[in-house]
Length: 246
Length: 256
Image (cartoon, rainbow over all chains, first blue to last red; front, side):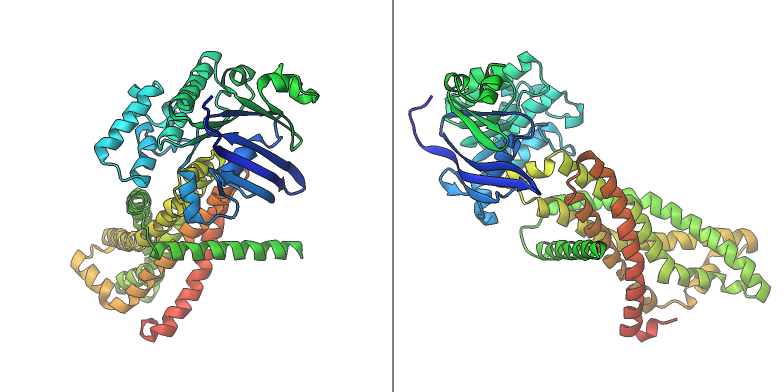
């Protein structure tokens, strides 16, 4: 872990409900730059919601959410777009644009959000495709890719703007152990080389043990455990212990 | 009363959505590449449907008109009846309804699918304004394409009518055209053709609304497609009545 203590993401007393269902209740935690936080919890406990709140894709009912020291709650669209450039989001099902080829999926943010020349964009896209092992598939449409390939492509797109913080929603779900390990390796490499902060929602305990510097366990909207893997595995909360020692 | 509240809420939301489309259409940045792509999608890919439908409708209409007019010995009026019907009402309305079916359902389904598969969230997460990127180009493409598609329907209908009539009476093409346009002036056809820009806006905005705002996952895709077609078709018919009254009010000479 890097020695820096710069806070990348911070939640302060965040609450979120959908109708009568309270999904997050007074949630507070922070992730430092260069640190990997894995969020564990049973289905429907607000893990993905936490990521979407960080990206300001939805608004909390209460609380503050800081991304690189900027509170994104209630932020205007222009400033929000600047903050979002610091974030890369790997969606659960990759969420690749199915009307664009894989190459175009990666080139789109570069051509729209940077002033890079076409040749430079081409270099970046091809390098990223090579890094995720998809160099030969750039002209394919997402529908022609397997689940693992889509996930790697989604990760490449999340990294294309060289974000300071990467949010990954179940990066290993539906993948075999080897492919899941490859995704984890890519994330760790990113963290090591660029001091990137990682916030990963996952059910993959092997991945957690490999990647996480800190683990947060959510249960019924509450943060029931937070700490290193060892600390959480000795937690008094049975859900936290059960999830980490699964 | 609850249904009334929900209905009013829906109308209000659709109104605000449409207002945002208008504002984002006239303020930069403009999504030119997306607009071109959507124009090809809406215009080119609807052309065959419009032309074939217009041709068939023209041929059938002539057959029906002939059987009526022959009783009065007024078969010479067939080309004029055909032209007036198509350019003033049938062309704009049928083209609008066909486009609502083909393009409206497509827009609703595509956007709902993008919502269900988090593609819209992905666009937002890349700092791209999903509304400007997805909605505005689609609505503008419908607004621009529909008047041209309407003209295609008008002329294909006229051509279908001519073929049908020439089989019965061996009328010459020039005579048919002369008779067709005898009763039709520019003012009769410009306003009805331009009113299809409103139909295009209705199709684009309503279909986009149902697709963009759905949150029911895969089930929402079918629902959005169905609602897009039903509501935009209904609104096109209502708008047609209102617009005809407006056209007659603003341009009294166009009343035939």
